[in-house]
Length: 334
Image 1 (cartoon, rainbow, N blue to C red):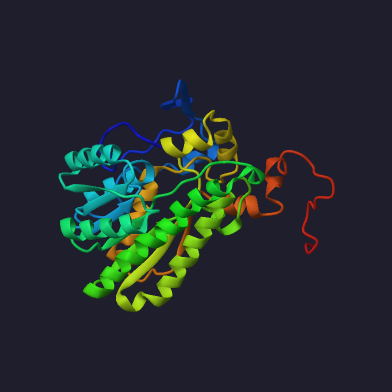
Image 2: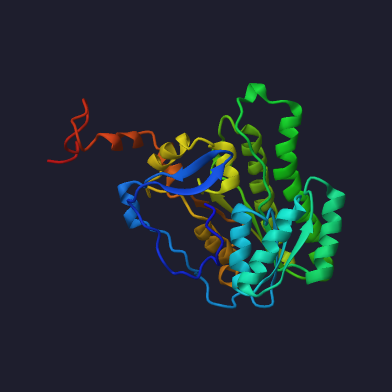
């Protein structure tokens, strides 16, 4: 969800539940709406404020790929507000500069912008050199850059497959390995975090390149958690469920018709928010989580467990009507 221009995490308020649909952002000439949440969402109102205490990242350097928009922007905003010196990278320098200036003005901490296409290993190497030059070796590395689109798999071209896997898997590997090597040389540790998706574990039709690449990112993260812990590096993963951001929803759900279905299969009855994701990311990258390594955290309001359970669809009518063959009493009751 892209909120109006303001400082995140300072309001301390809860989002209203059970209201009529609210206008959030436009896609071309169309307006995308947040659908009314399910009734149970009143029990799971998202907090907007920062979870960690002020200055939790004072003196720390954070590098965030895809930091100019969406989830990357939200995470950068929170880390900067908690004292980190942030460096953001993506392909679009104009977007990066605008975001860096906006966050710097809000938090009072300098945010650096470096243009980088993570698919290009030479460009990644140059970016890491510039990162170290302007801010020092990073204490936090968040691999957030991604690409995705929906397509029947039989229509995918080799170039379409390569585009997604180059950004998601190869780009994450290039960034992680280059920074990791520099940290080993400097004898410095860091917390690495990758943003994947719940279907990296289960697989999903119509987004096969993304599912395959994200699964590779998770395997790499767990592998390096085992191998590079001795160098002072931790590697963790967040698997977000549906979180409303302009970039993702304009591409994957431009009409908004899929959003209602998504909310219907989330036990918590609503979509996630950028602020919640940023709070979880900040915790995993903080010293409070120094014993969390090799973890893959689901962040989906219970969506994955609901859609995986064979009998979970009985929730729709089990209480309202008799289902033929359903036991009214346990067979073990007297």
